[in-house]
Length: 380
Image (cartoon, rainbow, N blue to C red):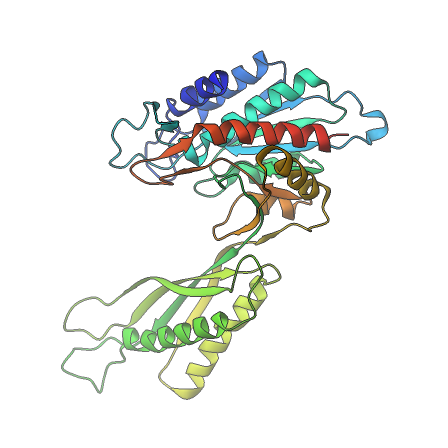
C-alpha cells in the first residue's frame, strides 16, 4: 500500500494541466518523464513519444515470454496524464492524505488509476507472463484525445483497460456524441421597419421548439439496458447586433448523445428533417447546418474474453463484479473502434473536475490487484 500511495502522491504533485484547456498549462512533459523513469526502473521497455508539438505519450512494455507464433494475448493498459485546470482549489498540487483519502488535482481523474496500472504493469513484469503488457500513459484526454488517437495509429493489442474513476465497477458501454452547428438567416433592418426585416433569432426559436420535440421523441425510444435513452440539447446560442436592428443571423450549437448503433448519418437525417420541415412551413425560414465533431459510443461484446476475465477476477477480489454503463465518453471508444475491445475500470472517489478532488486509497490498491489478476488471467 505504501509504495502505491507514494507513487500516487508523486504523480499528483506534478503539474500536468492540459494547455488546450488552460492557456499556459504545464502539459504532459514533466509527468511523462517521471512515469517513463519509474517504469524503466521497474524493468519495462519505455519510450516517450511526442504525439503533437509539446504533447507526449509514454509507452512501456512488459515483454511477454511466450510469444511463440504470436499466440499469446497482449493487454493494453491506458491512463491519461493530463488534468483539467486547478480553478479555485487550495493547494491543488499538494497530495494530502486524510481518512484513507488522497486529495489533489488529478487524484481521481485519473492519477489514481494511472498509479494502479503502473504498479500492476511493474508487478506483471516480474512474473514473466506469456503475453505482453503495454502501458500507455497518454496526453490530452481531457480535450481532444490526441494521445489515444496517436496510440491506436501505431499500436495494437488483444484487449485494453482504460483507467477512469468507476468506483471499481466495470464499464462495458457508454454513449457517444455528435456536435451540430445550426445557423438561421434573417434580413437586417431598422427595428422600426418590421416590413423590411426578418428576425433570425425568432426563426431560431422554431428550431429550438423542434429540438425540444425531438428530445421528447428520443426519450420515448426503447432504452438501452445500461445507458437508457439517447438525448439532444441546445448548448450555446448567439445572434443579433444591437437593440434596434433586426438580426440577420443566429447561431446555435447542439449536442446529440448517441447510443451504440446510432451513427452520424442518423443524427444528420434528424437535423435535416427539422430544417426541411420548417422551410416548407415558412417561406421566410432559411437555415444551414453541419456536423462538426463526433465520437462513437462504446459497447463491448459480453462474450469478449476481456470482459469475462475482469468479471471473474473482480468477483474473486472484490466480492462483486458490477457491469455498468457510463453516461460520459472515454478513450475506450477509440480503442474499441480500432478493434481493441476496451473496458473502463478504476478506483472510487469524488470531486471530478471539482474544487475538492479525492481518491479512496483502498480502492486504488484494489484496482491494482484486479488489474494484475486480469493480466495474469488474460495474457496466456
